[in-house]
Image 1 (cartoon, rainbow, N blue to C red):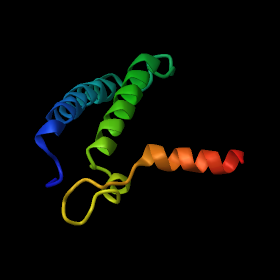
Image 2: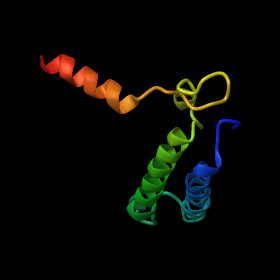
Image 3: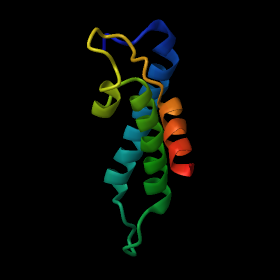
Image 4: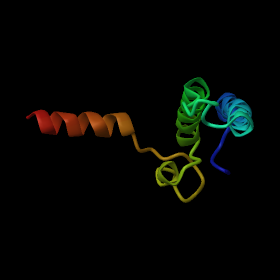
Length: 97
């Protein structure tokens, strides 16, 4: 990922931590099964895994690790000047008018 810079290191580290914890939660689900002996979902593990993966996806997007996020990065490997917040604000202003 040539577009990453030194300033991205904390987000990259957090992504890696989410990967480690998410893998542990997934392994616990595989080991124990997604449902208990009564056939009920192991909601605590399932919910924690879902929350960790959602948070990890936010980091992936911010780091340009998803196809959609990469479309915002210029071909020269630099970050895009596209301002998503400004674009959304413009869209909301147009819809409310």
